[in-house]
Image 1: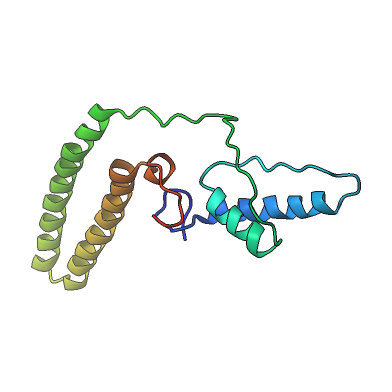
Image 2: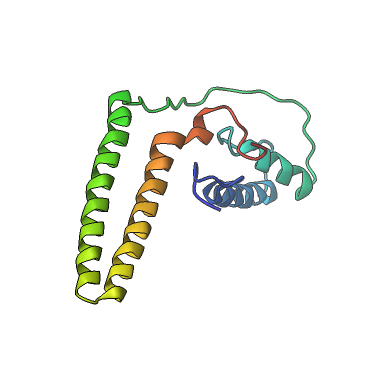
Length: 154
């Protein structure tokens, strides 16, 4: 599982924060002279917290009241940067591919077949990581936080 927006059904960071919230809630419920307790968490946490409050603590929902405590605006997307990223990546990738092929061919000419395969392998690894990272940045952009999904049953 990954961090928020990392593609996991329930991000690890959300689960860990929910664990801490429930630990604090248990302490508050066990404290003397405590008659009211509030949990202040965002919507991404609520499906998991609701399930655990019901399953682990035996609590049942009675009323629901939503209050806007804070608001997080999605980051402004810089469309120009995103549109420029792909052609720039393709240019750099093409240049790197040409250099890799040239160097691998030179290695084969001198009888260094292993070096040529190593160059090709490192090219694939290098660009696989670049395309994966760029795909996360350009295509996903933390969509789980801003598309209205509940983070659990997306």
